[in-house]
Length: 124
Image 1 (cartoon, rainbow, N blue to C red):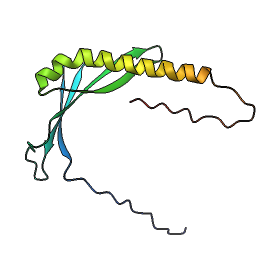
Image 2: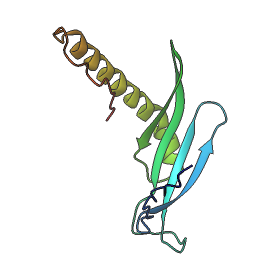
Image 3: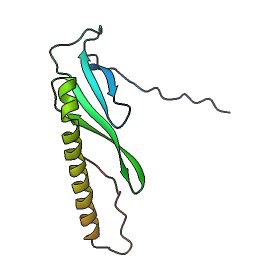
Image 4: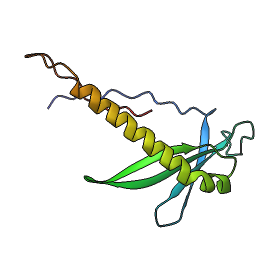
């Protein structure tokens, strides 16, 4: 059996962009991820703002769909207060984008022997 060298991946951690992650959940439907910026030594980096992300699952005809969305907030309480509204806005955008993609796909002219589109979904 030939011994080929496996290529080594060159991975570098961006020490200027580190975050400590904490997850808060109600054990029912909602989780909030709090990303606190830290320096390379683990101390809180007060020069950057804390980031919040909501996480939940929505039921679809095909089963549960996990979603994650950013929440603009200054603290955990504000993130929890904004969670429902931000989630609903995110879902509305996601549905609108899916419907637009569906309309675009339905209006596409089918050409025999043409290569298929990649069919990737990109949510913004």
